[in-house]
Image 1 (tube, rainbow, N blue to C red):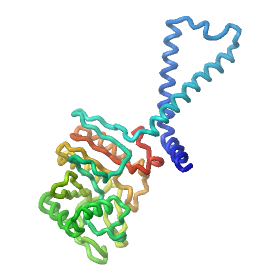
Image 2 (image 1 turned 90 degrees about the vertical axis):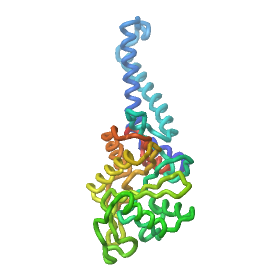
Image 3 (image 1 turned 60 degrees about the horizontal axis):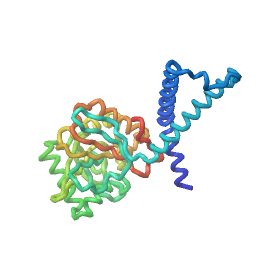
Image 4 (image 1 turned 60 degrees about the vertical axis):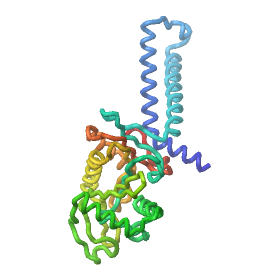
Length: 298
């Protein structure tokens, strides 16, 4: 029963997209019939004694029947689709939106974007960083491979200082942030981590700022700048290996936008900067969100 309810929710999420596609197909059928009217004698389609109103009703029934068939067909396609190709760059690269697990092992070389706070904390204690967030799950995965949280923290700080040539924009006090790192970096700062022998490069993207209650906050302007910096990083540092990222901004405390709205914004930014896309980019929507976030019609 739960699975059936999930399917209905998926259809509801994608109803406008599916209905629009079915209307387009129906209009194409009507256009084809109009062409046949000019080329063929269709007087035998309706009996001579059939009234005009009956002919109208039959025509409407045919159109509605065709729409229903196309709707059912497209709904079936959407329900099984796991990926949508939303942007094609001139160099053969693509931007995909897909359902899946961002942190799954993919085998080959790739970069995984991890939204983080601008202090680049690594303490997953469900106070500073929650284990339910992508940030927390990533830190736990890295630590499970033999790296301590302190070692990861030092590696990120070293990358910010030595490779990115970034300086903190603010030195916090313990009254402002009761735990974790006190050096806050500019919006959109990026720190990379790659364990020796591994093929996955984790790209920590500094977006949110913790308030005194350790809740992440991001303004609309900061969010826009973060996505812009992310786009530039993919262009400069991808090395043509695929880049995987979540829908950015879903855990921001003062963000009132839905996951679909954030996804639409990200795709619009990538589309505007299509000339900078030089590798395949995968925006990953958590697979269990299929019934609440549509990846169609972007």
